[in-house]
Length: 223
Image (cartoon, rainbow, N blue to C red; front, side, top):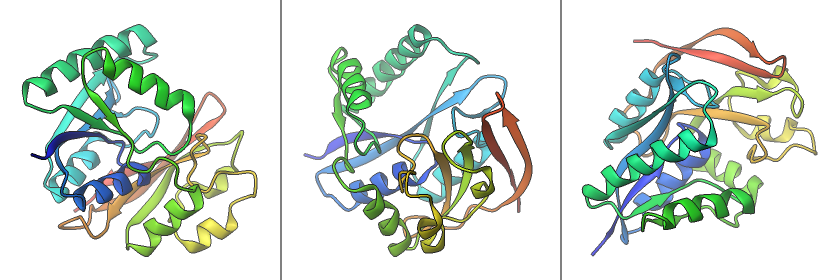
């Protein structure tokens, strides 16, 4: 019997590549995409992508989207409480595993495993241990198309904001920057690829700066 999986979904390249791998593994059935949305903004937490575009992704992928709403400036306790409630709902649907696109950050993995084990849910990390460069190269090799939507200017120059993630992007990254942005240097949005039934249409909108540090490229749904 296949394990019924919900995948933590930001709309970015790592979660998308994790989904690609899971869909090719007959041990798993991906039943939901879990997306954390900030109340009041209706955008993906951290990435800043409009939830309408995440909905368009899910529709193209043919997998239902499960939203977890959190308040602005959310505390760890509130986040944990809402995640625990969401997990109980997913378990009631027969989902017993939650997958993540994490690559190498041990503290993040330990936190996820600890919280999930409290409610009897298994944590799965399909990309764990792979090199960051290999992950980004694979994204290009398989034909996924993605764009940089957020840059931490303390780690990467804002000029990379809005760039397509391709071989040119990878070769132009400073040596100190993780090629997959695993340390939070940049976040992305995937809009097309081999597991999409159709491309997600958008146009690039204004650039917004938060806390004099985080630069966001607003993607506006189109078509």
